[in-house]
Length: 142
Image (cartoon, rainbow, N blue to C red; front, side, top):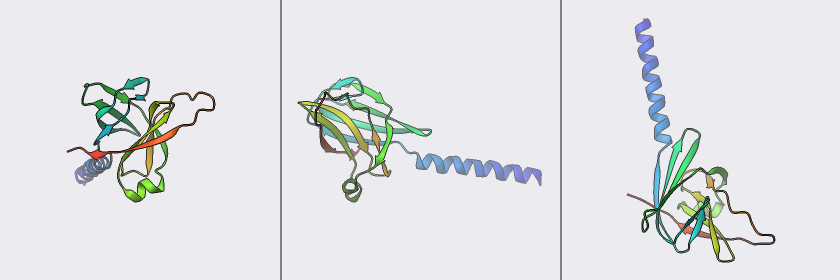
C-alpha cells in the first residue's frame, strides 16, 4: 500500500509540474519599430525586432533583439496594471513606447494573453515634459 501511495504522489507531482509549465510558456513576437528608443539603459535603433517573454518562477525576462544589428538585451519588467480595455478588447499584443522631444523609451508590453502588462522603467522625465504613448503591434513569431 505504501508503494502505491508513493507512486501516486510522484504521478501527482509530475502532473502539477507539467500543468505549471504549460501555463508558464515562453512567447515570442516580432515588430517593426520605426524610431530609435531606449530599453533599460541601452539605446536601440529603429528596425525589425524580436521580443521574447520567458517566465522565470514568479517573474519574467524579456529579451529584445534587433534583427538588423544583432544587438540583444535582457530586461526584467515589473508587473504593471491590467491591460487597457481597448487592448484587451482587440486581443492583439502590443508594445508601447513613451516619446517626448524626439526621444522614445520602451514603456510596456502586453502579450495578448495575460491580464496585466509588463512594465519597464522609463527614463527620468525632465521637468514639465509630457510623454506621448506610441503603440506598435506585435506579431506572434513562428
